[in-house]
Structures are given as C-alpha cells and as structure tokens.
Image (cartoon, rainbow, N blue to C red; front, side, top):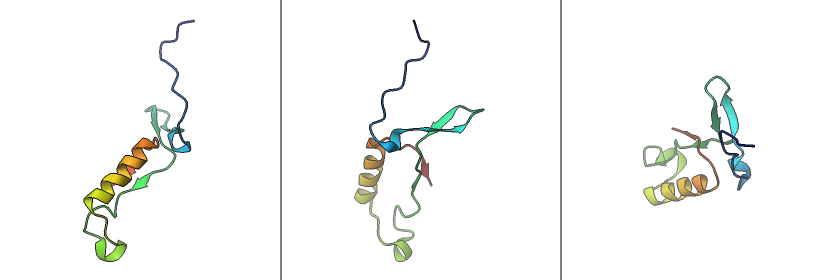
Length: 72
C-alpha cells in the first residue's frame, strides 16, 4: 500500500515525541519548551551569566535531542 506521507522516524529521545499544539493548524512541537530568557547578558545579575558559547551549547544539545520549541 502506498502512503501519501511517509511515517515519522522513531523518536531518538522523549523530547522528540512531538505533541499536537493545535489541531486546526496541525502544528507539532516537542513536549518541553526551552526557556531562553537567561541567554545573553541582560539578566546576568539576576540569573547568572550565560555567554554565547554556553548558549550555543545549550541550543545544540536541545536540538540534537529533538527539541524544537523555544520560548523567547
């Protein structure tokens, strides 16, 4: 049987088990959202430093694990 859309590959982590965000828009997102408020230096006095290399490492790890929802 031919399928119009291919099946999704198996999730490589629990973060890659996407949830339906909106049934009317058919948007699927990762079950956890990465908060990005502390990225950069604007909040470093309150939340501690998070320089560019640390931010890039966090984003790379989140993406590699299947995450794709980031709250800015």
